[in-house]
Image 1 (tube, rainbow, N blue to C red):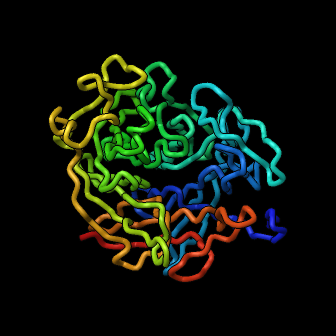
Image 2: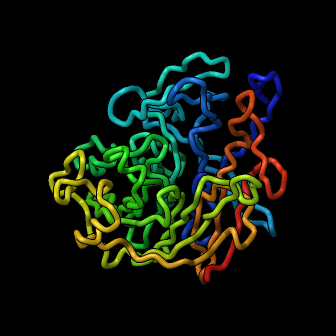
Image 3: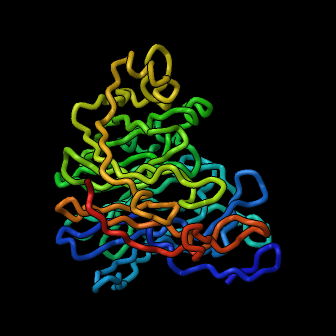
Amino acid sequence: MVRNRAGADVPVRAGGFGSALAVDAAGKRFYLLTDRGPNVDGALADSKIFPIPDYTPRIGEFRIEGEELVRARVIQLTRNDGSPVSGLPTPAGPGATGETALALDGTVIAARDGGMDAEGLAVLRDGSFWVAEEYGPTLVHFDRTGREIERIGTADEGGLPAVLARRRPNYGIEALAAMPSGRLVAVLQSPLDNPRESGRASRAVRLLVIDPASRSSRQLVYELDDPSYMVSAVAAVSDDEVLVVERDDLFPGDPERPSRQKRVYRVSPSGATDVSEAANDASGRRWNGKTLEALSDAERREAAIVPVGKELAADLLALGYPHDKPEGIAYLGDDRVAISNDDDFGVVDGAGGIVPKRLPLTDAVDENEVWIIRLR
C-alpha cells in the first residue's frame, strides 16, 4: 500500500507477471516475467516515480491446474556476483535512457549500475533464460536459478548492433523468443529515434534474428499497421514462422478513446531484406543518405527493402479482450497460443499521482491473466 499526493492509500499488487511469457519444451511449465517494477510518470521531465525502489525483476514459474495458474516458484534475478538486479535506470553512459528515478516524496533516487527494465523472455532446453531489457537495450543470459551468465549489449565487442542504442527511451527490445534452432528472435517495441522526428512517424520496426553463440545477427523490417502502434510480444512457431503481437496503448471499451488494435500476426522472416550495416555504424545502414527510420514507406519500396511477411492470426478485441497491454505470447502447438498481460502491478498515473488501474470493460482493477486461444 502506498499513499499518493492526494492523500489516498493505493494498493500496489504483488503481481506484475505478464511482461513476457514462455513455456518449457514439454509445454507443462509457464514462465512469466516482471518488468522493472511498479512505476508511474513523475512531475519532472523524463522522470518516473518508483514506489518500491528496491524491487528486483523476477520470473514466475507456473503450472496449469484446471483453469488456474498455480505458482510453483519465483526466480529472483541476480548479477553474476549474486547481488540482486535492480529495476532502476542506469547511470549516464552506454545503456542510459536519461530517465530520473524519483521516490514517492519526489526526491531523486540514484541510478544503478546493471539496472534492467526486463521485457522479453526466452527459456532454453537446459532451463536457462535469455531476458531482453529496454535500457541498453541488452540481452542477458541467466541460469536456471536466475544468476547472470553473460550480457550482450550495443557497446560490447561483437554485441548487439550499435544502432539499437538509438532506441526510443522505454521502447527498446520488447519481445524475445527462442527458435527451435537455438537462435533468438528479438523485436523492438517501436522504430528507433534515428533520428527522433522521423522515427516517431515511421512504421519500420527492426526485427532481429540472433545467433547467441556467434553473436551474429540479421536485421529485418516489420511494418506496423500504423505509426502509433507498437510490438509487445513474439513467439516462435518454427525457424520460418513467428507470431507477433501488435497493439496500441489504449483500453478496450474506453468511452472516450477505445482501443483499435490488439492483434496477433503470423510473420515469416524468409525473403525479407537484411538491413544490417556491415561496419556497425552508430546510425546503421543508409539509403541515399537516409537511415531506415528516415525513409518513407514509398522510399523503402523504391530501395527494394522487403519487409517480413505478415498475416492476421487473431484479433483480440473481437474476442472481448479487456486488457490494454497484451505483452506475452507463447506457442503451445496445434495453433494454440497463450497470451499474458502486463497489469502494471495494478497502478497507473492519475489525479494525485498513483491510482488503481481499472479496466473500462469490467471496472475491475487490472490483474494478470493468461488467455489461451486458437489462431485462425
